[in-house]
Image 1 (cartoon, rainbow, N blue to C red):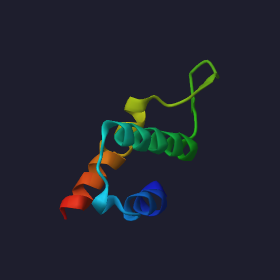
Image 2 (cartoon, rainbow, N blue to C red):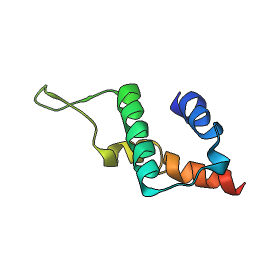
Image 3 (cartoon, helix red, strand yellow):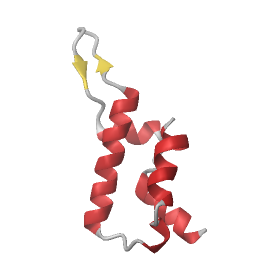
Image 4 (cartoon, rainbow, N blue to C red):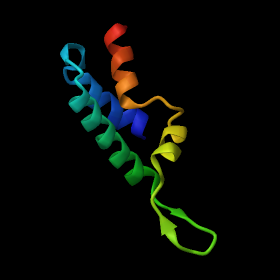
Length: 77
């Protein structure tokens, strides 16, 4: 759902002419993680407690193809 709906909309709107500063990259990554945590939801531990997924778990779930890399790829293509 994320790759089909969220990512294309964010990247399509003017990404070809963006200047990707560190500030913008950080904001894009925060946005992406927030949406991924919402989509994938929390993880239940063995003792029954719930926890949020870590950034590393989220990176694995999208095969290390984050929104900044995707934006750079689309700019080059």
